[in-house]
Length: 313
Length: 313
Image (cartoon, rainbow over all chains, first blue to last red; front, side, top):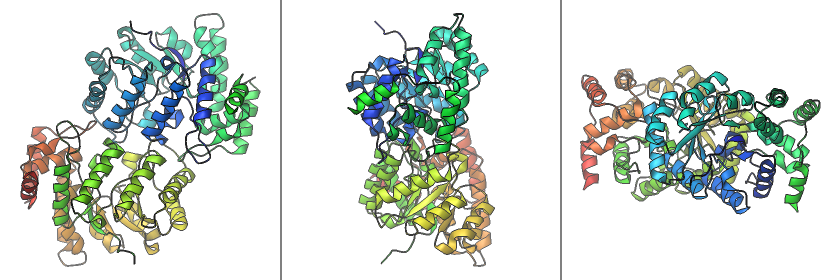
């Protein structure tokens, strides 16, 4: 029997690095376990994970370690899309064999202005070469970064060709009407549309979407996950407002280093601030300012310090 | 004693694929040898090589085979830049150990709007981690595709920090005043600026640049290389006009599949038309039309058919 599809709130898990810039497996697993404890799924190796700043082997080794640590693969949606067909197939097959809930797949993003025909062929080859009935692909539409869009016409064609494997999308257009147009067009075919951040979370779920995969679910996972469970309840709109206020503060900074600064601060674990080039850490002043603004909103990261301390023991 | 720097005309060698989309080593070596016979250097694994549509291991295996075939590594400038520091270091070290003339290095191109500080850290880590005195980096500025520029300020800082390793750049801005500004600023420091196509070749060399690395050097290598040797001679401007006319025809098509179609046609080797997704081949009509336009200009690919036939034997 098929497992239930993954839905709700997922975090594109930030990846900790050691001082020598190698992935820090211990801190990675600790953060993942904390996120799961806050009722978030794990979209490891997304944009906010600096996944494309890691080689395929580094990502596969982290996934092996995460699964070995006992976290349920059905809570995971690893990013596996790369510029090359061959790397995409290798990493996708590896994740699928681990029994993950699905994979989040960027289009090949080096060439710009490519055709839907070319993108269809790429995804089609991936499905056929992976050749695993468990494969569930969530298409990753993030035009501000990848610059290569996932169009309605492409989704329609892929869904028709591979209804079992094309499971949904993450829409990081930051354009709710666009996300709703995808829900309206394809949700009835079983295509699960996640918003790329939590700002339209209540609207997403009310419209038939699947939830959100949001950067800020790295630092505010519990509150966002609670909002998801309260859609339609009297407090839903108030919860939405509160999580949006936190998001609003974070949007004033470069998101990845700013979130790592917060995890270092609230986790009392200074090693968390390291980013890989081409990113750079936030300044001490930006860090102090972001914390002050968040604390004025009553922000906290409950249980994070204990999670990081336990992992260090 | 240090070898003389590579200069003149280089071809970003198109990569042939078999019907199953795997790299076709035999045809690749045949094409490289033909290009060298036409006095072109080999910028293998560039944008026109579909290099980013291949995994690192595929590119390294092709380079191993090319060197093993007897082509002089000092005629090679393989592309080695990737989104991740770790892959860039691995592939760059591999090429450098082969004794190549230099490497053409894209900036990490997934994240957009990154700082010069972040890019400096990336290239700096690459130089330090490769740790090979033979390393010569040619920075690859191609904003229409990579979307991440190599600025004057970044070049200045890198040249100051690593005068022995930062050897030059390929400027694919298609903006001659920009290229000239790089020559004017840095050529006196021994920084070799290649234009990203042959249109400003005479001007490039007269201004102190190093030549060009041009897509169309895959199909028109001899004439472009001859133009380079005749800069300043009476026939230089006429040769420049002739190669520009060929370039002008090709710019009416998607360059990579259009060039592969021409190699298939003039090489009498139909297997050459295969491209990897997300690219698609040109239509038969586009192919016929491009050939008719080129033949009206007296275009030919001398020796290509024999080169492909010999390789097939």
